[in-house]
Image (cartoon, rainbow, N blue to C red; front, side):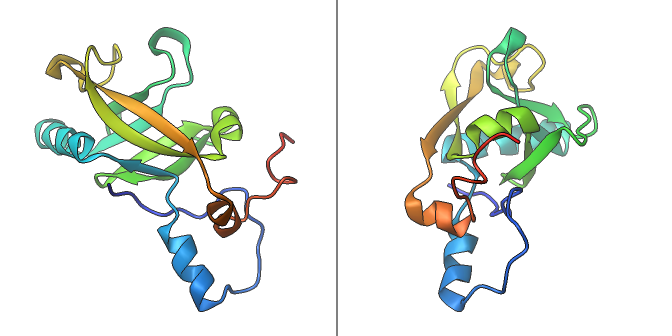
Length: 152
């Protein structure tokens, strides 16, 4: 699995961490992908060019990772960049991030019909988000604490 470690959007400015903390922080990912998802991303990128992922917040497609040609889905102040999967940026809406910020997301691929506007639809596959809670060590590395994990 691969991904990009992104600083916690909630973190406050702090002193420079020690060497061991830097290593832990660099290893904490908010989003990564399975080898199967990475292979599909590579195929879609070859066909459509650079991509962008956005975790759908519900409505028609439920809560699913949606894959678009980069530039065809506009992100803005209401979105949080969680990291990259397969070299492609992965976003989530801020309100949804408030609910999911305690979790590490793993993007997988399963047989089925993808979201209506998501590029993987014709492949007979769909992206699926699996999640798990961060460990205490990961929380510390991301500077997440109880005070920061409440809606403001």
